[in-house]
Image 1 (cartoon, one colour):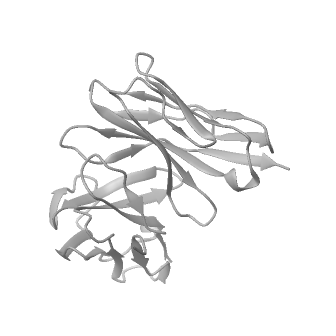
Image 2: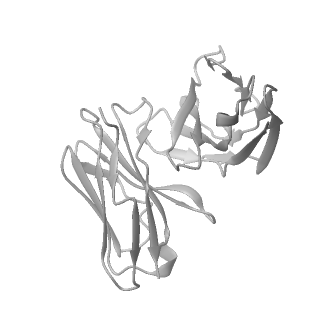
Image 3: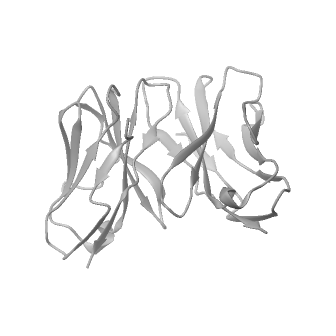
Length: 113
Length: 115
């Protein structure tokens, strides 16, 4: 398997624009996670899915953030409208079962100017 | 709420030497998992080692081993025979054994390996 695949790797956008980050989990993994990494707050969980259903979205910072998982092989994280403070690295991760290790993608570095 | 603390923002080790990275955590749960992840400059998060709280034996993966002290809530990582490729940010992480499946990360330790 190619691992967790995220796109794009880098995204630069202007404040107010919509941004969509994409993730393809490892095939057969039932859990998918979105994390955000910043210098100030470190790594924090935004939301996670089990079998395409959102289970815990308590980490989603604001209504400007939304995440979907329309099928087992694809998820999106959307920010609309984007703001400079959203600049961060966004990671997607997947795991096979609750207590197995999470495999991370290479992350998307988002810069909002 | 669970917390993970890494008190060493930066560490340095000579190539071929041994280094220990510290991690403490706070939880009231008895069933949980602990992890060390490595993040090299490529940004990829790579699992180094994991420890189940119910296991008394310390986990070992080649040159990497942990010292898990459950009563003290301490989970340190020892890297033996350090190599240049070990240079990275290392994150300690906690996951509940219950329904909550999220990883809680420490702030990380940046490890430099000197040739």
